[in-house]
Length: 280
Ligand code: NAP
Image 1 (cartoon, rainbow, N blue to C red):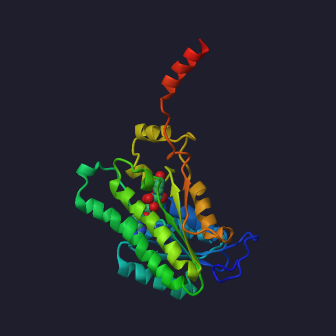
Image 2: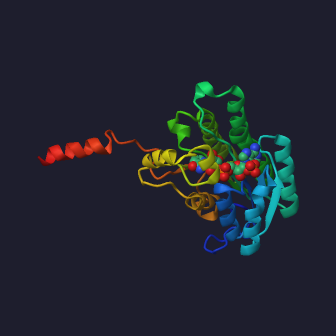
Image 3: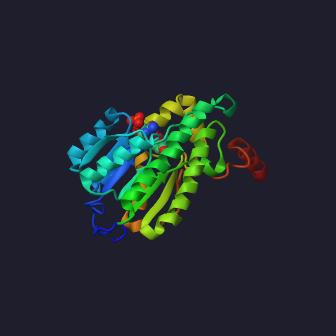
């Protein structure tokens, strides 16, 4: 592999050896799964979020599995905080080779009940924050290359009633992914996105499907019949960040159990009735 300016070999089992990866929101949910996988594959992991108590499980895993974890306080919606977090990471490890823009906030609110402040806050974290972090990472990567993976959601392109704030932020993230991919390709910085459907995380469960009925409802919308796991999504994120994806940039990869595909024209009950008619 040469794209990150290093000598990691995609055929080894530690393709991120000697690399440093910043994962925003890297201590919980998908971020924790991504950080753990990157660390297990050799990376130094910089875990960046507001609440350092959220980093303790990752720090434990780093000790158990033998990879370096740097815990950095960062509010991605605050450019100053982002700048000092990246500066601290570069000072400790000498470079930043991978950025995973995972931090976000979301909640369900019909648009007419969504206060402008609520809309603006989600845009600040989930869209503006991705730009602030990408810009700092880009400045650090521009001489030696690197890889950025953004986390989107399928409703960036389909829309989804109840999450207009998040849908707009993620649509912006996908536009940013393609734009920066084209702009930064000469610097050997690849920029891709992963668009996961509903997967199990405490944060999403608390905010998006807090009751058993809601869990059942969401599950019934997933053609593969179950929620994803953070680890299943993390595998794709890490693969896109790594040497085996060295010719992929500007792509948005969906991993959603079919959630964003067209729903059946008729419900299962109606289809049974039609089958009975055919059989008659
Ligand atoms: P999660 O565990 O709640 O993760 C959110 C993380 O973001 C937390 O670690 C939080 O840490 C961090 N964060 C929030 N605001 C921040 C800020 N202002 N500055 C820095 N960090 C901040 O949720 P998750 O489900 O794993 O979600 C991870 C990503 O997947 C998000 O981008 C989400 O939109 C996306 N996604 C999730 C699903 C799903 O079904 N779960 C589906 C599609 C897309 P602190 O509180 O410590 O700051």
